[in-house]
Every structure is written in C-alpha cells, then in structure tokens.
Length: 143
Image 1 (cartoon, rainbow, N blue to C red):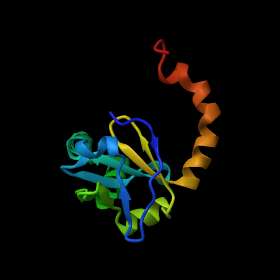
Image 2: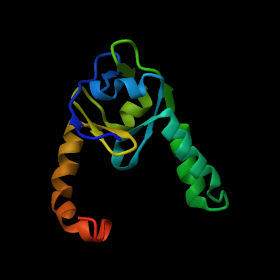
Image 3: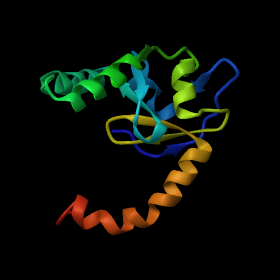
Image 4: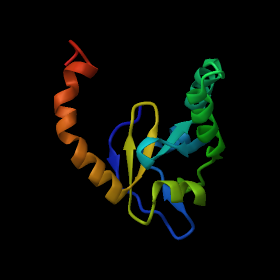
C-alpha cells in the first residue's frame, strides 16, 4: 500500500528519486503511464499486471474500453530504478503531466501518482471541501 506525500525534484535528465520507503518494493521494476487529471500513475509490475488482466477481461466492443486501453498502454513505460533509487520519466509522460523541476509524489493505495507541484496544489485546494463532503457516499458506514 502506498501512502503519503513526497516532494522530490526532477533532475535535468528527467530522473526522479522515488520515495525511500518504496524503493525496495519498486526495485525490481515498475510501469509509469498516463493517469487522470494530468498526473502519472506508477505501478509495481504485479499491480500493473492485475490492472492489465482487468482491462483484458473488459469488452473490446465497448468504445470507452478501447479508447482508455489505447492511451493507457501506448503511454506506458516499463522502468527499473537505478542504484540511487532514481527512475527516468520519459519525455512524453513529462510533457503530459506538465512536470518541471518541482514534483509531488503521492501514495494512492495500489499505485503512486506523480504530479507537477503547482498542479497538485491546485487540485488539492479544489478537492478539500469535496473530500470532506463525500465520506458518506464513498465509504458508507465505514467512517
């Protein structure tokens, strides 16, 4: 499970230090792809395989499934962190997410998300009240 908020910087070669607490879990490889709201999703390989299996079982006759799968898989990049725990973010993915130097990596349960720091701040500010109001609809009877 991935938790927390981390603020690594993107270096001039497009590399990002993974949060230290997750380096062991991701050391064998990971997949980075486009996510919603112009962030990047980072999956450990086993989780990416699970998501792949779920999409594989979705009906290819559904246009939304085809459209989502095309973008999701076409933009995916399998990466292996270097010995310092850095991972290279491909240029196309950096452009999609608007990544500059200052980034935010958030834990999102089964994946990490990489955001441009300014985009994350704007998203978080916009969602604060909605988050406070949604607990009963999202987790009825749990919280």
